[in-house]
Length: 234
Image (cartoon, rainbow, N blue to C red; front, side, top):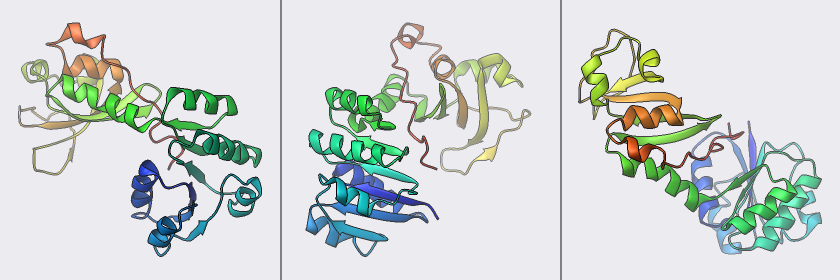
């Protein structure tokens, strides 16, 4: 069973903690606020009220073979820098640190924190493509320039009914469903309708073209989005 440590329970870590509690994993929770620890202690594997500014505390509480550590100390830049440095000195590599500013993130990059998380920026960037087109329902970058998205079929696809979507549009269709239905795996003989919702995978650029052929002037301004969302958190 995988084991994760959460150091500091600010808003991002709280949301992540509640997601992790829904799956089969061990959770080690550390925060200086006793009320937070008392609230979650019965739902996690271990919970400690501790001063994480103390390196000995980190060395004592965090196992060296832990699968991942999430650091969310709010706006306390000094604390997150120190804790990240302590974790790196322990030889840990799967470290994820939530930051509130570019300056904060740049300092952590010098230390070498594995994954620097900007929740507000990433949420905004993920939302932007969906604001720019009504045909995009969900959008998840999965790394190396690839994205997975839920989209409605563009008019060009409905008109062509191509049996080789990848060759024609540069997009792989994985599955399709109706608005309230469950997904069915895509088969080349499927006839697309305007009521379909497609689950597709492709490059960010190809997805923009696929969903926005009627808006070519907008394509180049769509920011190409975060690439580390699920990195190493499997």
